[in-house]
Length: 325
Image 1 (cartoon, helix red, strand yellow):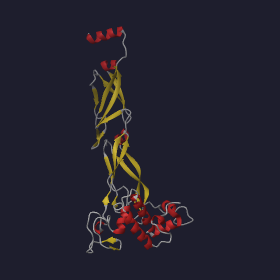
Image 2 (tube, rainbow, N blue to C red):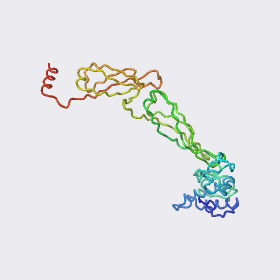
Image 3 (tube, helix red, strand yellow):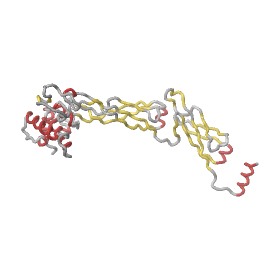
Image 4 (cartoon, rainbow, N blue to C red):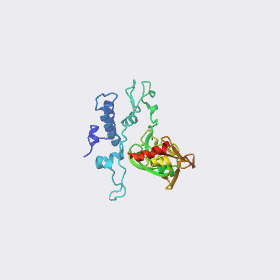
């Protein structure tokens, strides 16, 4: 069935435009959260604003009167009998104070001494416009920007090595042609990831947040996060690789095979004794430098030495002889 906007304003279906305005004026003042301290007042105030937003607009009212809330919010055919042309569904912007301010000309008529109401505005006793913190006609139409919206952008190490293009779909509220109501639309944002970008890199799309009356859409910022990699860990512009080798190779030397991010197989000779603090540095095999992608950091190989779980007496004797001379 849907909600009955006429009942919300305590009106019958035959109410005139003047009846609708007067009902909203009385009920909105009575149920304004600054005056009514009941716990239900904010929701009642919001319901009144939505009902007035619909019934005060001839186009929305016409759709609602014929198709009800379901047709109003779900959309209806623009040309009856066709399937391809539908109106945008109505979505209340959920800002009852915006409706109140547009109607009365101020956010808070209870903040000071107000004189007689003229039209939909309030004036002080001398007939001048009020100038106070909560509204008045001087504040009408003032726009402020919503706080920035941050989203995480998880990228594989290969994406940050080569660079890539990421297309991200966002859903946001956009203003309809009537300039008051909004609907939810999808939009594709394109991010050109540059080689060498690091964790914490921020990409900002200005004013791509929700639209609404008297607000500037928020900026949307994507913050880069690196996905864990099965072979490498990044440290600045360097790549860390941990090679697991047995004790004998740590002592006598070996070659370590490393598959790089771009698919090459490196065979790195290790001729030194691998002690606990030892690492092997392979120059220019790390990540591209963001400022100069043709240059690269280093590949740093660290070692996990596997000791034998047990030794026979004979092997112990041979080791002792070899190590102690």
